[in-house]
Length: 515
Image 1 (cartoon, rainbow, N blue to C red):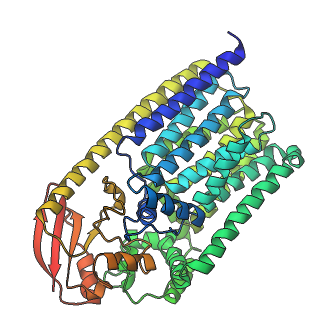
Image 2 (cartoon, rainbow, N blue to C red; image 1 turned 30 degrees about the vertical axis):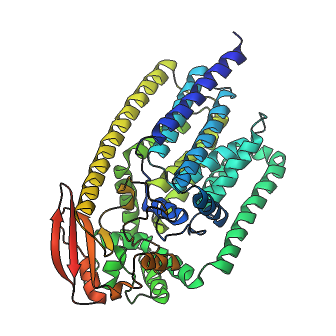
Image 3 (cartoon, rainbow, N blue to C red; image 1 turned 135 degrees about the horizontal axis):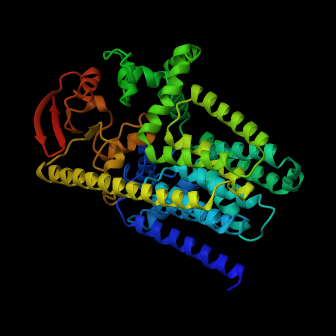
């Protein structure tokens, strides 16, 4: 057997394993990592407002419009999730192809193939649009600007286009990492990259201007301005710590706002802008600097598998066969950028991992790790073991969600509910049922959709126009000793609600309030 035939067979094994692995996960009750994806899926499918919405705030309008059209034709298929899985597969496929045409020794090719599997499968267990966009940008940039190999160029541009369409900011972040990699390690090749660079910039500019133009013409500007200002406070690191450390009085409107309950509170766009200005002033203090480091460790301690991937990528970079001086310059500047960016922005694990995914650029360029085969074999075995534990944790979490949904179904069947159901301390991603235009979501959400025309449609579908007009409502929550605050909010905007009944299941509680 020739070397090329062996490489082709090995690549085929890893590529087929990737396809089968993602296929198996697709038929498991995976869940989105955040509520943002759930809400966007409910919008474009028509499950939340009663009709497929062509605009979903975060993803590009051409993509949300396409989703709305295909959901209108075939509403019961999860097209949103299927698209994320498809982009995940195509991106990981390109990364595997890059590995197996490289000069890495075979055992190191197997190591990187396993790493790609771990990243792809983790992003499939808990897909999130920022993660998928970042992975697509990584794979697309590696392919489009690869001067060593031919083939799959079109696929590279496709995943890069999808990256900018799914989460523009994630693609830009990975693009910044790629730019820094080029400046440090491949400055002599800049001229040869000119044509694909111009094309990529043109596509990114086209998508950016297209989204801006669409929002100017067809989206409520008052909502856009409010939502932008809302994000400036909700996603502010100082506000995060003030909420976490109980520094905001519970009788303050900002307390409810911090819990995503603000639909009819007297908080205007101007109030939010002024609040952000006040928060910005607190960034320039020793406490804010310490909180920035504390926040990184706190967030990564809650996302241990992403932390494992970060350590793995950082270690691989440090032992890669690159000149020490350039490695030091690259990592010192990039880590400094990460720390400064983290200080001024509220970063979660899904963004932190993207900062370290870009280390794949120099690692793949080096095409060799300075590590013995024995130690690499031990590392491969350890990775398999750790991923097995990750699968076990996913299975346990999956079983908990299934139990939650069993209890939810039981509660809803036992109650003849005609009033709106709100939930508190329950994330939208806990629900495993597939809702559609024909089977609407039975709840009202209080995320970034508040104060939008889409929320108004959802209210109209459920028979009311404003929260303050309600005479009764239900709250679904986990059983917890902590008091619920949504009833206090409702009495704040429309006094007179009193609890009428309480139904308790193994882990859920349904409360009925009425005037």
